[in-house]
Length: 224
Image (cartoon, rainbow, N blue to C red; front, side):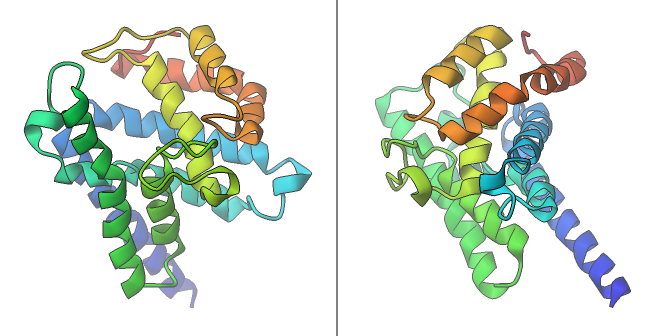
């Protein structure tokens, strides 16, 4: 049984790695982003697990899974045309509507796999993150306009990690923000864009976030 469990875990990890590399192959900026956001997500989940409200939900297994599955959040971008995905500048309204379809596309793809393997918890979390990481706590996000607790917990955690990394990273359409500026934007979004409980965990973990960003800074274009 132990050997079977080890083999199952290795197969899962290889599948996640292969799918993440597929998304990375479409976007040259994705690789370093994946490494950072998985560490931010793990840190947030670990911090939230110390709070009584989440102790029974955010288990060590949850923390491990969010680290493993968060790199699949943008797997749906493989369906986005190159002229949109690789555009060297800000998207116009029509292009942005096309880009927004990646969340549902990723969720649908992973859900099909989950239906074939309903006991695969990593597929369930990966689907929830892919489909929910652009939802907003106030219901103003996409693709389904979910609000509050309707948004899967893993997606609410990942959303803060994802936005933080986007803010401190340089893109063709924006300069990198400092940690303090990114922090102020996230705090301002508490209760509207973000789950307040996740923002509180972020504030308790901000030194670790800075350390992670510094650790990856040699390979990326982030500003702390």
